[in-house]
Image 1 (cartoon, rainbow, N blue to C red):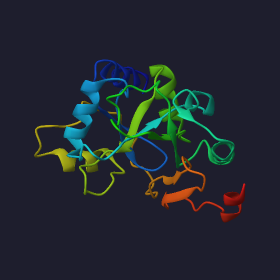
Image 2: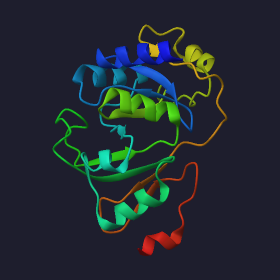
Image 3: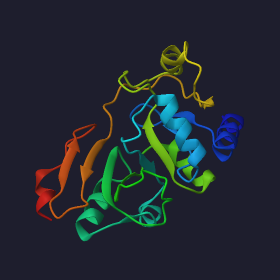
Length: 199
């Protein structure tokens, strides 16, 4: 696994797109600070350029470098991170302008997955996080599922970090806390407690 992890990091550092396990499904990751990598990610997924991508960080401290955390956002982060919760907050100008251009918010997640955390810490910068599938196709829970989707396509992920077959879990829950009233965008792996909305 050590050699595979190093190969994955090398691909990330040279603008590549990798697939790796998370606590939900296999996801695609690339350098959020590389325009080339982001272009590749959108092409590989056949994803609309109007659809924003979220970032994965290893801690709340790291998250604060790229997003503005209100008192309410901090409560959600401290209660549910690490875990399958993506929190949308106002973005800081520490993120490059070409990342989700024209969008003033950013989705951030601290995964509860040892390999994902290890990748982020070793890489030293935020990684994008999105399911490792072609847009409109089901999320993959095994390497063979990824390979099957991309078998007939010229554009494929640059490397797949094999963690075996994953348990089928729903995607992350997404909540927008960039405005005064929090709004659930997607119910995923868990349902947020309604009590916390009054914080």
